[in-house]
Length: 114
Length: 115
Image: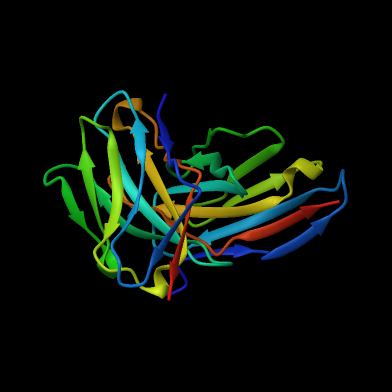
């Protein structure tokens, strides 16, 4: 079972370059999330999508855009990368609509911006 | 606003001893609380959750957690630690009264179990 798949796993960018992190889940989950993980700061929510066709800002949305392409896929785009966006990015998904259920995480995408 | 605090950056425990990883929360309503574990270079894995009912919840790998409403805490426990339990542990909260689907995570506690 694939679960939540993120690509790429590693990426190095120069300041000002753009890129898209891809996320796909095969569990027919309604909700999908993007988090970033930084040392000493835990996981911070960037954007989330409660269901297909909707997206909402999290704690740290500046510098990012998202697209919920369909029920399976939720991409995160950096239009003009900055060194402050060096981080490990995690995509997650959740079944149901009530919020009782736990999150399922991908393996992470490690991004370095030079 | 909802928030989670994990007051210890690191917890060291000897193998075979009981372990506790602390978590306190702040929400406006009744919380949904979760514990996750992260092994090196991996994503987070779900351990257990409290939604309602019995204050002591049991989860994967022999872990359990106790919900204490008066102390707004949800500490993770295990009676006998294993070296393989060494990992990064995250507490998370969702406030169903917030009207959003946000899950807020603590900063994480690194558990080291010494042989």
